[in-house]
Image 1 (tube, rainbow, N blue to C red):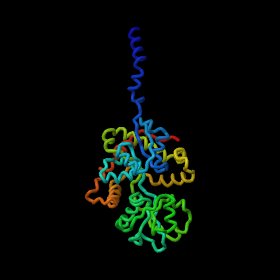
Image 2: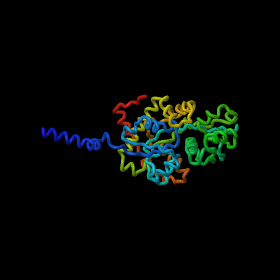
Image 3: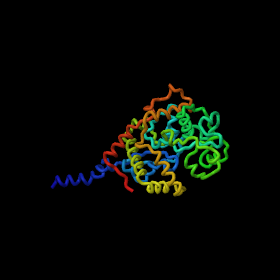
Length: 336
């Protein structure tokens, strides 16, 4: 009886401490993650938040709204833990920033190169002429450089002019103020049937001609070395979000609409279809694809060929592959 009483006393007095020590009830690890915009291009992260996948993996993820350049600076300064703007971070890495890209979400940019003049029909016709891109050094310019490279032409075959985003891109194209414009498919959809599409020519469709890794998760070398389990859990939950996205269009769009109230149903539906077809199969890329992209960026950044870092100094997919294997082994499937 005395022993039973003692056990009961330990149970009553120590239960709270035992529960605190239990891994299942430990405080979640805080992770600060940047998202540049609410769209299908960043849906896996937003889904993982909304569906509680990060919480299930023991993470308290805080979403911070920040464009790529700002996010890269924040990652350098340590005020965020994960940037989802891997394209912006890649340039910083090639200049010496100690980051790793641990997940690549998309690799087929859905851009089109249109001329605005009737006699400009091929890439060869554009020699020495200016091409409009959203901003200098962005994915539109990289896509143009890769398109030229795939055709055996140098990156400086054309000049590059920043024209802005969205309505500014559409206005530049419709006005014919530049000989050619690299334009996103969604901007073309917004334009409808306008005269420039009959006057000019579709010169290249990057979705069909190149592979370019863009959008993905980036972490510091310090976090990767000191807390690999935290990074692996982040990727594990994000991949759940990716699998949910592939399986449930309506559920994905509902989550995006809840997070971005300004998004209308038509835009969501179009964006979902356009993004899903550009997704990487498992979140990683072959080294040869990564190398070509890095070489195009090096030319843009005036980095000599012999100073381009090796692929494994920029990308580290080890934890991503581990997370994918765990989900496959568990036969995990998303629920609506």
